[in-house]
Length: 233
Image 1 (cartoon, one colour):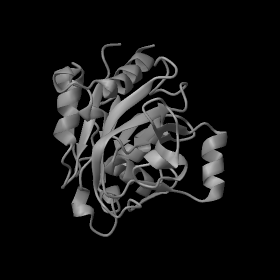
Image 2 (cartoon, one colour):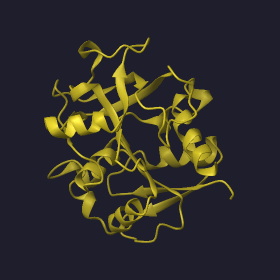
Image 3 (cartoon, helix red, strand yellow):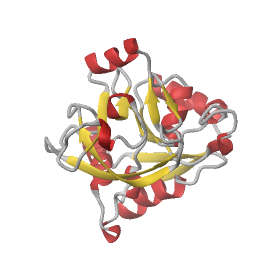
């Protein structure tokens, strides 16, 4: 098998689609295609990226309208067949609206848009997206969102914990998880989760913005490179 191909879905209002494409194709040297939201063909892509931005202007509710774009039927079918999908920021919101991941994302507890670097602890090193990353690694990846406050009922949170579906948590530079460094009010400091089958990842931080050595940050590339290695192996 050659290198896996990534498909980056473009919705009206996406503004991180080219960031993802550039990081994957130009920096990490993987094949990548743009996938228009009105199409239904996934172009035989091995990994589907739902990028960040403000799909449909965030009208009604973040991700609520994008969830009904024609391509999402194909994305949902692909996910049910075990296809690997990564939803980043607004993409995470779309995955929740589509029912591919549990829970919701509320307005940041500060009611302000937050844009800054954060540190992430890896809570599960046995996923498609983290298996192979050295244990105790702390990732430095930027966030940029107004509605990243992850919420779910107690039963759902317990299921996430019991099934090891929490992949990333907001943490300090040395990996401590506490309320003081929580940037948006997310329950349990949750920054990223997977579905029960482990093939769908949703995360608020932007790994595509942390791949280029020219920018002095490369921790996001660990997630993409690890995913590719696990596909090939």
